[in-house]
Image (cartoon, rainbow, N blue to C red; front, side):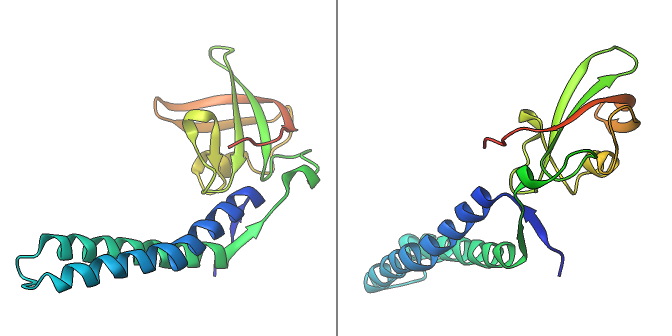
Length: 161
């Protein structure tokens, strides 16, 4: 079973969602299904079919969340050294061709948001960065092709989601 690294805040958010789905949402959808069933002919009962579909999506999400929380490996990146790129590291890169500076933070897949500079530990980019030190060169595959970067700085900054 592959562990799923994540921040404590993400773990709490997922477990709260799972609890809400199991306790509140399940009961609510069951009530809607019962009420729709009471309306009679199920073949042409749109409310019933919509509720059953919603129930299916909800049960799939419960399974997904149960799996995720069961595999969760909660990591506090503030306790790590960050001398090398690791989970929770913020990495400042300099594009060798343009001298442009870009910054990424390596996080779990649940926290990932490339538009906000948070890249998943499982992404090819993060895998290329993991274990590197300040001053190292790294080749990254980006949307525009491969680019060479110098690792300018590795640090820990609080990760705000």
